[in-house]
Length: 165
Image 1: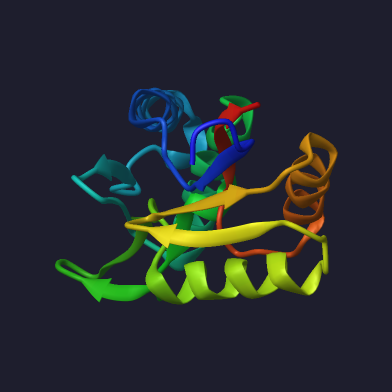
Image 2: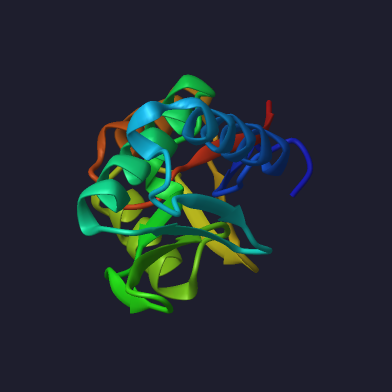
């Protein structure tokens, strides 16, 4: 396949930036008067962020703080897959946001379908693990695919890597 222009579609999370965003959210919660004595807390786990607070009101405010920090650090909110609000110990509430990384086989099928539907001659895509590799003869066609995927309403943060001419 050498010499055929290609690129990879991936969905990755910058873990350091996520950590920074959560740290900043924790600091903000610690200093804000409206969070004082509400038991509000943001915790980063391996593949999730857990929010806890005394009331649903404060929990919603906490979620907003976390999302603002994500946006400020140029992290897509699409990586956050919010679960439902649950009752937690001591009359508090919690909400977990799973961190989505990688392209599932369903998502890869969807991406491959979308790429095929563009009807660009000589463009092919195939799933390789949690990556979709797109190949084609013309660089302009590859860039058209990137543009179309950027504009598409896809529920995943996508990045385009390893562009080779």
